[in-house]
Image 1 (cartoon, rainbow, N blue to C red):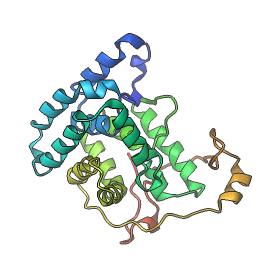
Image 2: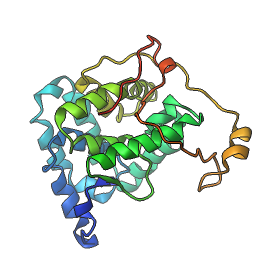
Image 3: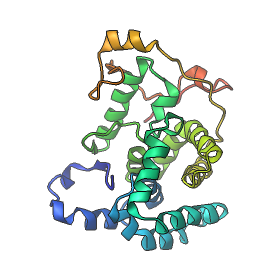
Length: 253
């Protein structure tokens, strides 16, 4: 997925120009570093492989990530040195077939709790308030979508939201390190950019799956409960009990 979020004015972009536009988009956001991270965490497509020289050159321009350059270049080397099919199969094994590495933030926050749906609605409203709509077939808590959104909003707001979710990002990074995944480098870089030090997570609430299926019905794939949202006024990237130190959830503004 090369592009996850789009402003309304981009809806009419011609399909045959999408790859060129996606590559150029790396240079146009207010905060291109977040877009850079988003691109690397997306499912690998041919456009990503073609853009690797540009991505490598851009990394040299971010001294704030100097301590992470070696690991990030390791990921770029990993992407450069394998066939697209190998990369795609490895990505699916890492992120789609292993829920320990899922890139859906609220997976670690709410588990199967019904509050997850409410948080999804709040996050969608956050996007819309800044003129963005989520791309088709994607959930708003998907980390690459969040990072692309961060790349287009004022830096202070992006940093605030990153600080709110950094606890989950660090948690995913730890699990990726344990499995030897080169993708951990991107998560480590995001932790380094955060204005807030990450704190350990406790296990999210787990609902009985049979009860949830009966209450909410199945999702589109028919495999998991469809968590129906209710409206709330704030985004909570983690509940009060989700951080061991007991930090209160911050409100997005």
